[in-house]
Image (tube, rainbow, N blue to C red):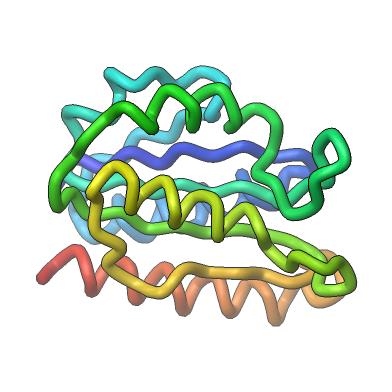
Amino acid sequence: MNILIVYATNSGTTMTTAQTVADKLTKAGHSVTMKEARDTTIENFSAPHAILMGSPSWDFEGHEGMPHEDFLPLMEKLKTVTVEGKPFVIFGLGDSSYKHFCGAVDHLEELVKTMKGKLIVPSLRIDKFYSDQTGNMDKINSWADSVVVALKG
């Protein structure tokens, strides 16, 4: 299966998450393309069989819990795209000390609904990655395994 992973990152943890999932999907026999959100076009959404999107949450222009600013122009363009029933997976990293913990996940899930895509696993929300790197990597790996299983079905 051809899979696209679109992500934005600040400190590198969202990219690390994307790469971890990409590695597991590749080992399961999938063809995976990773693209940063700023380098992704709406045309990139037509060919893949499934799409994963990930972003840290930001306080952007006074709005807490927003996707990374690199995602915002792409999201605006994607609101006009329909991908009826296409499988999607969402992941985000954040800090639960903020009012909107992993709010970027909520925005990306809403985008998938707008596009008429289908979320195939519960979205991943990682809290304070660096405060427990080992535990959070375990959560990411376990979640990535569930993505592999969901894509088999």
